[in-house]
Image (cartoon, rainbow, N blue to C red; front, side, top):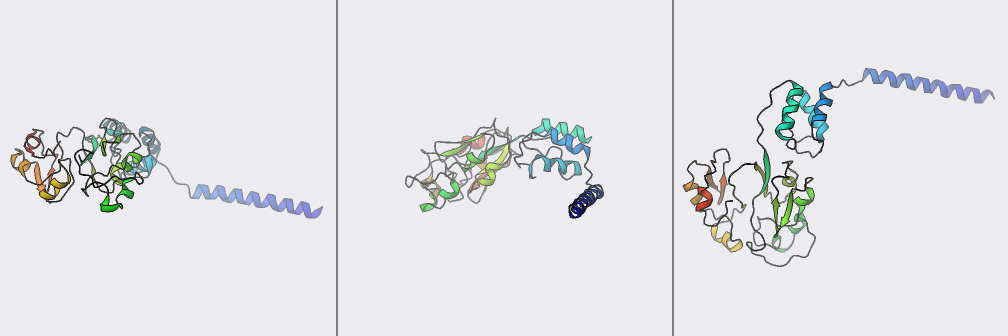
Length: 261
């Protein structure tokens, strides 16, 4: 009987000691949380997409409160969310340019030369290991496997006629499609961008024409006809500086291959 009593007392004492120890540790090592962090978190959309570069909305909220991220750091929430967070932080909201994903390729089933019919797994990362780097002759164009489609949490990108196409009104510029595209064909451009080069091939003109009917051949006609100096040809591929572009359309009108859309 004494043994049972002793064991019970020991257990009770140990429990009390552990409780006191944990309570004291909780007080000593308590991490103070800025009340604004919860307010900022509630203002964020809650998608936890990682497009801001932080591990979810809570990570971004903590970074904003610490001054490590801008108040408009959420690409999904856009200007409206940035304005709300700026009010919480007591700062002015910076101008936010709405962006959208853009696929720099037009090589669909009709325009791109196909070498063979692919029957393997529909994943661009896998298709790249198929013979000749995929079924299309162009080794820098969209494979059409839909890896970006699976990654998009907003149903904003789909495979149409063998290439990825973005629904601008659904896209939240989270960047997930950009991260998974093995050929790096997707980038963010301003939502209201007038024109963009829909090609990613750096091959020389004769090679491009054998692979795709709408590929950029690097002829430079677009650059020579741009009145604002927004177009240049780098490594056989035309590029448009969106900050200089005035959306006059001269480059698209003069492009012999219609590679600018």
